[in-house]
Length: 430
Image (tube, rainbow, N blue to C red; front, top):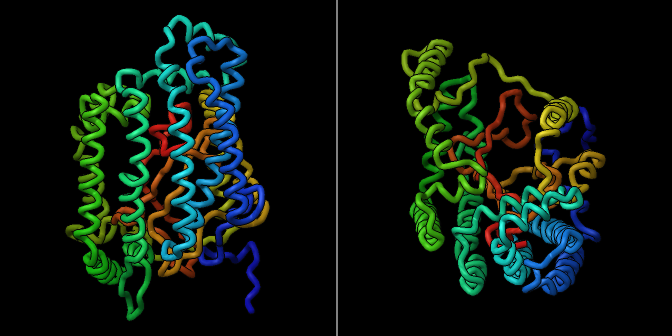
């Protein structure tokens, strides 16, 4: 038996360690977190019809309890989602995730009153409350929540939309996830997961890239109509939501969530479109570096190096941790502190010598669903909002099973998650 050490571990050797998310292992730990969240919800629900009269002490107590609730629901959701992502064909894992989502939504609907009542508090009173240093840990989120005042509906309407999410958009997203997780590619006489096929598009060998591109195209064909239908349904669902909430454009809700004005985003779009010669120049240069007259579609992600370098676990983890710690030191002073959620998942998994990357197999999904929330401006595992990371697109590449991490950067596009705040109805339920 081969002994794996920290110096020779590869992507295939890394497995999920989700135990730090739960107070006790397995379903009982998930149930304990949700039971705790139910108790906290019962406590918070007593504030109904009293938010407008909150003094600072009452507001601080409410937000601290809300943060504790978010942490409990977020941990349960993170465990269920990540546990399911390791094997989307396991009915028990799917049932657990569904149960967590249903209970999370039930909790969210009971707390809708706070967002609606907080939106009705006069601006002068809000600023007076938030001027107190004791509420500074939640001041940003409390101010940010009020941006949605023009787009809030009545409480009965908000409850309907929240409840229908479980069997609406969320259900369609899960169907897409299960569809994508079964996509395989035929390469070199072997059936491999989609991500393994996509990783070959980085090969320095053009013949390997061409074969991989054709194989990926053929692998994506089965189920294409179903996946397209899911996408169109989700787009239609969003258009209905935007219409009911009176958003002026399809991107307005995202801009509001990002705390960016429509004008600034449009200026960015125009600047990028107006400089589309930059990627054209890059592709022309890359063609020269590769010794080609013209790039084919499968050449776009090709390595310009003649060989591929590999690094082990220690060096890879050091590079990643150093990058994040440098960013933390540089921007810590300017980051807002949305709420005082907490998580030990990252530190615990690091101490155990594990990382939250599952070993890839034919049943391992190429689209992972995690949940992301606030902590102290960073996303570290104590979560609330659902954030699907879709690696089923052609722009996502990962190392294939059994191969160490490559020195080339791997891009993984994802929808930007909403911050866990006082807005449970639009954060996936928490």
